[in-house]
Length: 310
Image: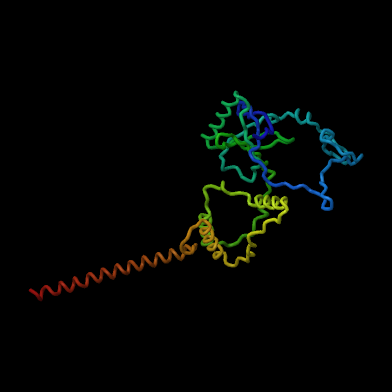
């Protein structure tokens, strides 16, 4: 059970829900220490006063804002706690919006909100069920780490999740990063969509961090005095893609093979298939006409023979 990182309340109109905030994710990355190559001494980061050269502890370090050169205004924890903000100790819900109206670029760290005490259980469940039934998410304001933030509340299974969000003016405009206009053929778009459908998946829970697993093997081998495992094989250098359609065809085939699908080579050229279908239909029409003509010819001959027999 992770330790709470914040405690306060959800403000839902006139309803107050005491809650505790717990991290919803954990960092599984392998971290390294820095050391001196010559004698393997640890390299540490120390906070030293630039005036007297003294190393300082956390209790000896204050907070200040430089309003002018060599002029610092001290800002204490008490100053921050006394600021007249309604979000200082509350996650204040300000609106309910459709979930698909939120740009994923704005979503940051995630936290679980748990009811703080028996009294908070009922309003907590009430908010959770209301969010589920409305199919909407809540937008809220809250103040953490010396700043007011924007948040998103949604339901995950039986828990309410808080996603920290960036303010609109914190999102850079991507217009300057987009490529110049280029012509893309409809058949290429259809081919890309077919590749997407071939690679479609309903569940991505099976993906793992292969880099971390390989790094753990390297560390374990070196700790045991062994040589690190060698790579299975060097990947072939990727050549320049000349024919985009050929690359899409090859990608579809590779995706099918990776799923264990077999059969004739994949083809994503839809237009030739449609023309072939038209030709087949035309051939059937011609064949039908020929059969009809063939049936009529014997009928005429039979009709011509009857008068002679009479």
